[in-house]
Image (cartoon, rainbow, N blue to C red; front, side, top):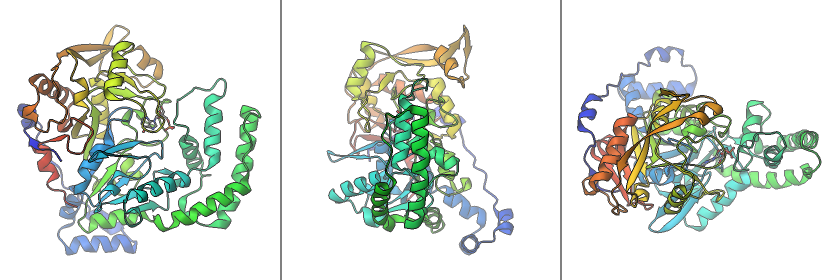
Length: 496
Ligand code: IMP
């Protein structure tokens, strides 16, 4: 990890003294009746007061998530921070995510497996909120084994996670290209249809994937239904799926997945009860969240901090700090509103400098200026305390850097983020322009060594967004990272 450096806005920091109320769980004790929870509460009683233990657990957890539309560079940040954590747990999404990590020049792209497994001391958990494509999972496992990562010892898959099957992809491809349907620009991995089945209570969970008779009946019934739906809705252009072949392939895959499967909620709670630490690794970003994002141009899961509790089985009272990752500018892949999008040559230049192409699909990312109203909204939804700013060096060549500081809709200035797509498309961003630094910042690991204008850019972002900057990334490698003092102190309470 890079060197520690000083606080950005000392006065604002002093104003933001943060008092955490201790959580009183005694009342809950009376209603606990399962043996596991009773044992856990007994453990708290044995090792200190209940509220103290709960505070200790909370101090040992952090959610790391994306502030905008994904691709903020979470992979690298999770990787850098993971040395302090006993486990890293994915809580939402599937192999639509693409987390790029570069260690000593070697590049790893992880889609489903949490970045934590790249540290030999860290467990990787695929939580119940994830949708798991067994074939994609096994490919990723094989790749990591080939690179010498001890996935077999470190990786656990929730028995309650939902399974993606080939008909989910078939439905998605048909829906995305059907006339009259809104094109979302999905990653075509079957993510949305798998979550649809989960909510319709007709999905297959990992625990059931492991029961061949149940798997067979499920596949037969689902194929009959999905083939009929695709034919009725989208015509005969898509070949029907063969349930017998599908069963053979997935029954074989299930046996390879089996050794990884467990009750991961139980594993995580045990780690915390024993004094260990857990990081919750978000996928996608806040504005792709099914509830809080730019609906319908969103993914189908809860990418925001709240999803960490439902997506892992760790209760919200045990979840501590929220760390939100943002680039020094903004990008988006796929369709949907993007108020600060830069059209034309300037956008293309930023794309080229930032190498802004999707890690999963290779699609060019749309680029835009930093959007403070959106960042404030994102911080509010997530309860974010800390910001991590990535790719600062991509702005190195610019003489001036516009930042959106307000929205104007129908001639009126507002700080409200419209809930509807039309409203967001009508937004006229109001910009302020900061001076660029036009000096290389790549690899700088101390705040004081940054050019003055770069420091101002970061201070401005911190002041306006309401969350404190804890880390800044100035290049793709683990070591090209600076950690600010207060954040480093907060992290010091967390040890794997
Ligand atoms: P889906 O998640 O494949 O259903 O795609 C829904 C939307 O989320 C599309 O706009 C995708 O481009 C976007 N999306 C999904 N995963 C990611 C990601 O990891 N990074 C950026 N965008 C994503």
